[in-house]
Image 1 (cartoon, rainbow, N blue to C red):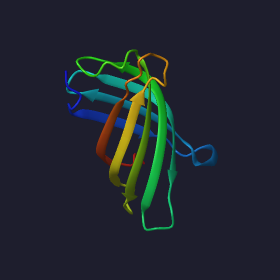
Image 2 (image 1 turned 90 degrees about the vertical axis):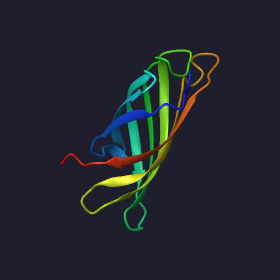
Image 3 (image 1 turned 135 degrees about the horizontal axis):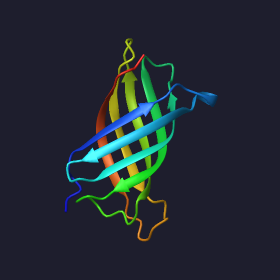
Image 4 (image 1 turned 30 degrees about the vertical axis):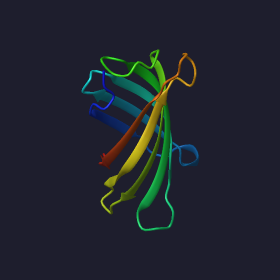
Amino acid sequence: MTTNDPEAYLRYMGAPLLYGVQPVLGLSVAANGAGWIGAGAAYTYRPEMQGLFLRVSSMAGLYRKGAGKDLHGPVQFRTALDLGITQPNGMEYGIGADHRSSARIYQPNPGLNTLYLFASVPLR
């Protein structure tokens, strides 16, 4: 078993709603057969600096182990922190990190961490 297998991760973020919070949907599939699907919310902080942003998101979802890491149950929460830059055309690029775990629903609660580079395309 390895937890260093590549993972494809798609995330859809809706238009900001109340206080700038955005609805988020996520889906990931790893080369080892592990998968995750979830929904939650995100908030993007955009300081006055040229195009920079910091985004935090949190989603609840379902995990399929495949040949991946045993997280001891299907209900898993995925929390992420992204740092990036927005281009004038709306494209976003950056680096992020996320953590998946059961929030102690299951014992033990080992968790799974991911570091990633991302590119985001606006759908408008």
